[in-house]
Amino acid sequence: MHPRFLILSGALLLAACAPKKVESAPATRPASRPTRPGPATADLERRIARLELSLMEKEAQVEELQTRLDNTRQEVVRAMAKLQTLATRAEAASGIAEAEVALQTLKTAPGQPSTPEEIQATRLLKESSAEFDKSNYGGALYLANQAKTLAGAARERLAAGERGAQRPGETAFALPIRLVASGRGNVRAAPGTGSRIEFGVEPGEALTGYSYVDEWIRIGDDSGRGGWIFRSLVTRP
Image 1 (cartoon, helix red, strand yellow):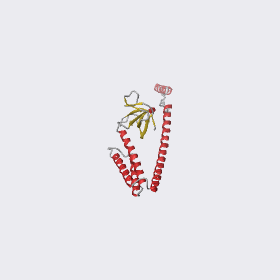
Image 2: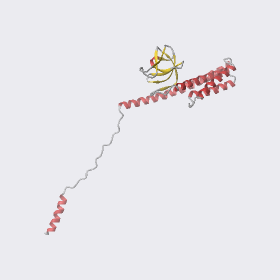
Image 3: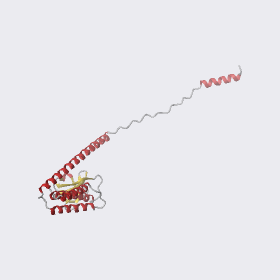
Image 4: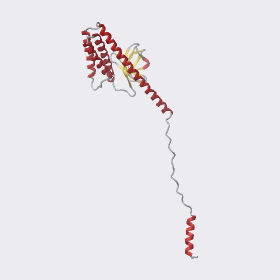
């Protein structure tokens, strides 16, 4: 046998017997599982959902109460139209003029958008003028007084905003709240017992609440003083 043939046969045999290199499949990463919210997060989400439902309920209640209030006003106005003796033409005209002044003062507040009170007071004032034209002076005076009260409430809210910038976590009441001191206590410069005492209040003293931080209420009194008082020291009159 030819030597060259033997060499070639041996080379082929060695190549056939050599171990083949096996390519390893690319490593696969385990599929990531969606992270489940922890107990604290789930509890917070439930609380937020309950608060949203409660807010929807309160808004519906407010709308219903507003409708009832409007209907009651109309009943009062119709009743006054039948009596014709509750107010004179001069008294009604004076009441309308006072309401117009209160509303005009509110509108001149610089940089302030129309408040719900201002919008409603404007509507009541128009209704008052319409009743005046019908010679229903009692109804006209009643509606004018309602408009003046709403304008005053809006003015108080704006005045509360002018007392200073809100603190972190401070929440304004939808409307200023009439309060009285339930006992002797201190009104402080800021929320917290470590804050400086501004003045003291006596039991039964009239106050107005504007906003709150935790259990501290920002209040003002009839003399123009203001500050923060602990919630347990005030109550509704």
